[in-house]
Amino acid sequence: MTTLRLLPLAVAALLAGCVASPALDIPAPVQESAVAAETPTPTPTPESVDPPAFDRTQYSIDSADSIWVVANKTRRLSPKKFVPSDLVTMDVPHTYDPTLRREAAKSYRTMLRAATRDGKSLVVQSAYRSYATQVSVYNGWVNQLGRHGADLQSARPGYSEHQIGLSVDIAAASRACTIQACFSDTPEGKWLTKHAWEYGWVLRYPKGKTNITGYKYEPWHWRYVGIPLAEQIHLIGAKETLEEFWELPAAPDYL
Ligand SMILES: [Zn+2]
Image: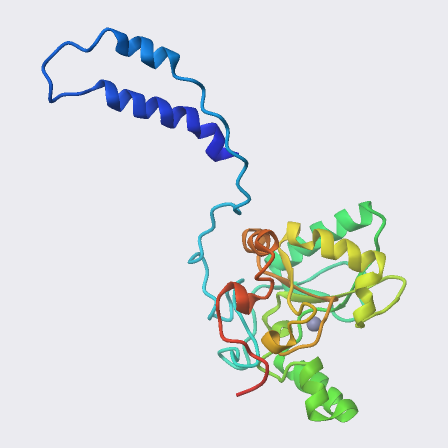
C-alpha cells in the first residue's frame, strides 16, 4: 500500500531530474513540457504480500531477559536459574499462578478482553514457573512417563520457556482438552490460532515441528514475542517456529 502511494511521487522526482540537464547550455525543447504533461498515470502493480519492514536486530535472541530470547534444548537459559525482574501476577481466570513479565501480562489481559468479547473463556493453566518449580514439574513427568517421555512434554529446569515469564499455557473454561492436542479444536483454541498473533503471541510448538523444536504439538502453549515479530511470523507463514525464523539449528534433543 505504502509503495503504491509513493509511486506518483517517485515518477515526479524522476521527471524533475530529467528536466535539469546541466551539461547542455541550450534552451529546453519546447515539446518537453508537453511530454511531461502527457505522462500517463502509472498503472498500479499488484499489491505486494511482503510483510512490513522489520528490524531483526531490535532485541537479542540470546539474553534471557529479552522478549525475543530463544530457549530450546540446545539453548539453555543463562544464567540457568534466571528470574525475570518485572514479574506481575494477573487478576485473570487461572488454574495455577497467573504470573508473567509485565509486557506479556499487559498483552494477555488485552487478548483476554478481546476473546471474552468474542464469547471465548480463556483460563491461564500455567504461566511463569521458577527454576525450582520446573524441577518439581519435570521430575513429576519423569516419574509418570520416564525421561524420554518427559523430555517431549516438559523442559528440563534451566531450559524452559515458562522460566522466562513470557509463556502461558491456555485452557478453556469448559476444561475441554486441557493440555491436549484436541485443544486446537475447541472454540478457545481456534480463536487463539486465528487471533493470538495480533497481540504478540506465537504458537511455540506447532504441529509437525517436533524435529525442530524438540516438543510435540502443543496448541495450548503461547509465547509472547511482541506484535512486530508475531506479525512477521504470521505473515511469512512458512517459518512458523522461532528456530526457523531466526535460522537457528534444529533442537530435537539435548546436546
Ligand atoms: Zn507450556
